[in-house]
Figure 1 (tube, helix red, strand yellow):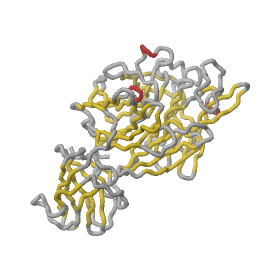
Figure 2 (cartoon, one colour):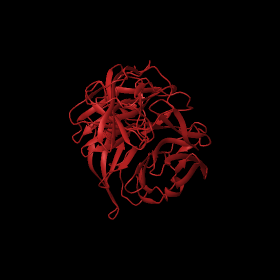
Figure 3 (cartoon, one colour):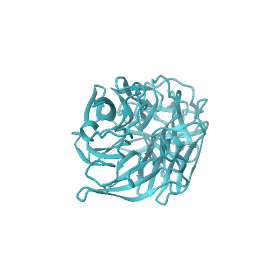
Figure 4 (cartoon, helix red, strand yellow):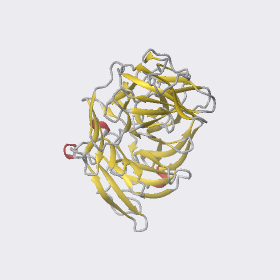
Amino acid sequence: MILLLLGCGTVGALPSDSATADSDSGPVDADCSNEADAHVGGSGVDTVPELRWTAPEGVAAWAEFDNGDGLTRTSRVGSTGPERSALLLGVLPDVSFNWRVFVSDADGARCVGAGTASNGALPAGVPASEGTAASGAIDGFTAAPILVPGVTDEQWMMIFDGQARVIWANPVKGVNGTIFSTEFERGQDALLFLVQTTSADLDGSIHRLSFNGQQTVVATAPGLHTDFTQLGDGRYAGLTWELRDIGSDRVLGDHVVTLDEGGATTVWNAFDEEPYIPSDKWEAGFYVPDPTALDWSHVNSISWDEASDDLVITGAGYDMVARLSASTGETRWLFANGIGDYPDTATVSLFPHGASILPDGDVLLFNRGDFLHDPLHTCSWVSEVHVDTAATTVTERSRLTGESCLLTSFLGNAERIADDVTFVDWTSAGRIDQLAADGTSLWNVSLSAGRAFATADFRAAGE
C-alpha cells in the first residue's frame, strides 16, 4: 500500500544533523537520471528528515521514500517554484532508507534523482509504549498527547505508525497548562493541540506544532478548555467557561465559540439552551479559582461534521448530546437525562465525552459510564446512536466495549475510520485501539503505568 503524505514547503526548517545522506548524488536506480539537485538533511525533529531538490518552475514534482521496513510512501509537495522540499514523516528511527524524486512534464513522469540516507534516533526520555497491529487494521498515523496526570512539565506529542511503532516524538515545552486534545492539521505537515486554561478569565490556547518541531500559537480565548475542532474555513470551534450567579448559587457553565487569531465569538450558550435545575448533583470544587462554584453543564467535547457544517457537543452535567449549526449556533436537537424533548436516555448516554456524526446521520458516542459511583465495576463504551427527530426517540443501535473492561475517567473519544473499524482513545486508561465491529482489537498502543493519553487523532494513509 502506498501512503500519501501531505507535504508543505519547509525552507525555514531548523538545522539538525539527525538525518545524514549516504548517497546524495548520482542515481541509485538505473531508471533515475541525475537532473535534480537533491539532498537530505535534518528538519529539527531527528526522525523527520527533510528532502530538498530543484525542479523546473510550474512542473509537478514529488518524492517517494521507503520507511526502512519495506513500505513505500509518497510525499506531495505544495510549492510549484524551483525550490522544492518535503518532510519525510514515517521513516523508522535509526534506519537507512531510499528516496527518489519525480517530475511530470510534457515528456511524462520520470525519476530525476535518487539516493539513500540514514534517519535519526528518537529523543531521550520518550515515554515507553507497546503495541500490536493485525490484519484488518487501517493503515495511517495516530497522533496523541502523552501526559503524567497533574504534571505539566512532562508532556509529549507522539505519532505512531500503522504497525503501532513510535515514528515521531516531541517533548512539549513552553506551554502554561495541560494539553487536552490534538488534531492533525488538514492539508499540512503539522499537529494542532489545545492547552486548557485554569480560569474563565485567563486565555487557553491552540498551538500549531509542525512535524519539523516548529511551534506557534494560532488562537487564544479566555476560558478556553478541554476540546476544539477545525472548521472548514480555517477557523476553529472550541469551548469556554462562564461563571454566573443564579439565585444563591454560583454556577459554572459553558459556551461554544468560533475562534481565530482575531479572537472568539460565542455561537451557543448553555445558560440559554439548558435549564438550570438546582440539585445536589452539581458539585463544588471542580473549578479551582472559585471552589464554591457548582460544576453544572460541563460541556466537554466538540466535533465538526463537514457534510452538514454542524457541530456535535457532549456535556456531563445532564448526560447531554447536542447537534448545532456551526454558522448560527442553532440547536438542531439535544437529548439529555431529565431535560429536553426526548425521553429518558440513561441507557444511551452516561457521562458522555466525544461524539461525531456518521455518514448515515447516526451518532458515534463515547460513554465513560458512572465511574463516580461504581468505579470498580464500570466499563466505558462506544455506542452508535440513532436520533429520530420526528418521533423524538434516541436508540442505541450497537455497542463496543473492547476486548476487556476499560474505565475512562478523564476525557475519552471515538472516531469511525472505516465502515467497520472504530478508533477508540481510552485516554486515562493509557490505551488506544482500532476495534472491529465485534470488538476485536485490530491495532492498539498502551502506555506504561503512570501515563495517560489525552484526546488523540487518526490520519489515514492517503489523506
